[in-house]
Length: 315
Image (cartoon, rainbow, N blue to C red; front, side):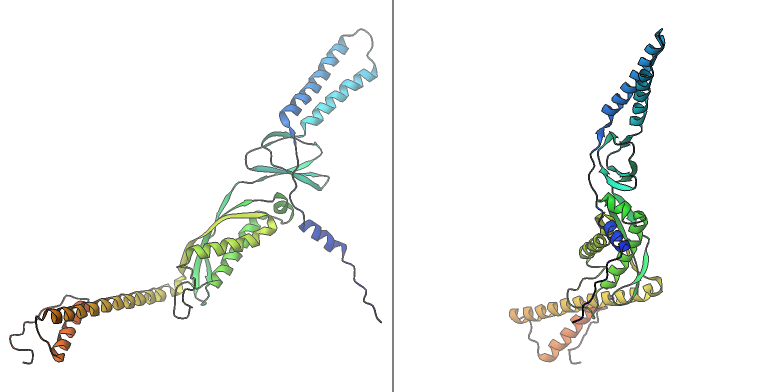
């Protein structure tokens, strides 16, 4: 019976997996105003004691000088640990290359001076993409653009999981818009199923699909999508004129159908009214002539000119 030895996972792969799993951790900082008072107290106290020591006649002891010097060093050391955070701003803290946590507290704060830090904005940002030339579901070239509102949600993923989260957002947004455009047709057509969503008619549905697509793509960088909507949608220049004529033809056909339907309804009502009120008795030939004349008047897109018949209908 043969046995298959499992190949151990490379250490580099395990390290990269660990980096991918790095998520934001909260780090509690100290009140900066309290620590500032302590630092000033240590430095001021040491200076005061040095002045007193210089006024003594006897030679000062080395231990007394060392204590005063230590107080100054500690005070200066404390001063290096201050930082200021504005509203909707965070700071990532590291110790000798290791991520320790993120502080989101506002105002003057203090941490271990050995911590390295990097500030990051948590404010909402708006990205208005330039119109992209893509193909829709039918393969027609179209131009499409979107406005996206996003903000950093997980600071650790944004800084340590991607190299440049701003550039990451721009590239992934373009890819999401291109993928979205390929899922829908630009406009209705006979080749589409009844009620199928299109880019032009299904604005809300398309916007929801775009937000869902962006959410999945931005998750690796800890980015939250607050809103996303299409701001530009048009046929590409090379087919714009052809598609415009197609839309005009469809509009004319739709309008003609409504006009003819209305005209037939009016003619039917006229014949029924004449028959019920017994104003005039019409045979089939006279009804056909009347229907023909009424349809010409009602369906014509130009003004009609009346013709007075001085004889009978048959002459």
